[in-house]
Length: 83
Image (tube, rainbow, N blue to C red):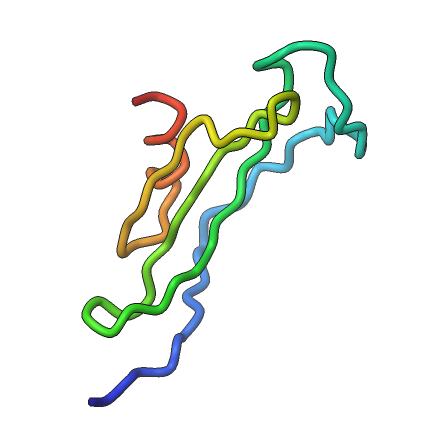
């Protein structure tokens, strides 16, 4: 078995900066007030690197959505919110 080394691919698309509206304030008063997201890299034997994206509600500390894909694209996150 040959495992290829991960090569980072750069994009020429300019990333639009967003304001940090949480400003490290992760406290909440009600559900669905604040969500946070994360992408986890998972190496699999069959498909190589895959990506698990999840969104957590900060009030309940529960995962409110997730997606898993072989490609890390913006659709990975968008699919969580709009499905």
